[in-house]
Image 1 (spheres, chains in turn orange, purple):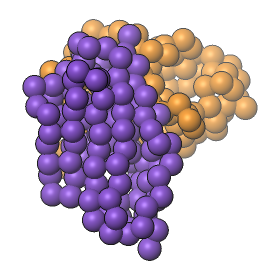
Image 2 (cartoon, rainbow over the protein chains, first blue to last red):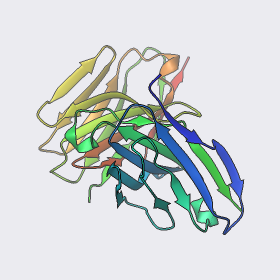
Image 3 (cartoon, chains in turn brown, orange):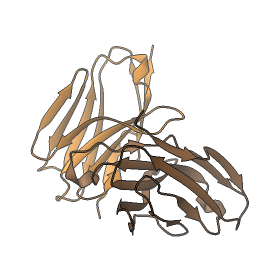
Image 4 (cartoon, rainbow over the protein chains, first blue to last red):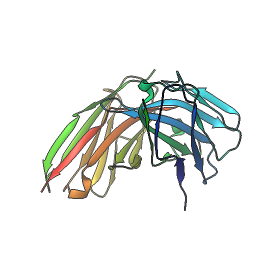
Length: 116
Length: 109
């Protein structure tokens, strides 16, 4: 089954404790992206990757890191989480970037992160 | 960068009636306009999209219209059903995707 998986689905942590949220897709997609979703703010892009070893900042990259060492995986790293990073996070992937207007973007099920 | 405004934030309609959600965008270079449906506890799922060279697209009970001159596009759902209840997001893309803030659609039985 074609899908985007994220782990963990739920995470409660404390300020400053490094964490990683994993994202994996099995569709051989080139483009992958991370979004955060906050009430009243919709979905905002954190980072995206056009292909292996190619990553770039989205609209809200502060406090986050990513890596793309393999095509299927795109982990999101919070080196020193803070309470304002409490949010619902989504990973997404598509064969090509959204701007091509051709390829559907598939979203993972989400990771609900709480930083106390 | 691109800015997408979406209205209304909440829409309640009677089952069987039509629902319309409207979005405006700022970047005239945007050329792709998808709509996503998000059910509770799930990720957004594409329901329909339209490219800038097309004015209208229809898929069964769902249609999208695009006015490039006015920089706005709309989602139309006819004969609404309880399973249409969800949060709907519009988005605009010239390279990445910029999302609207979402519309919570409630279908009243």
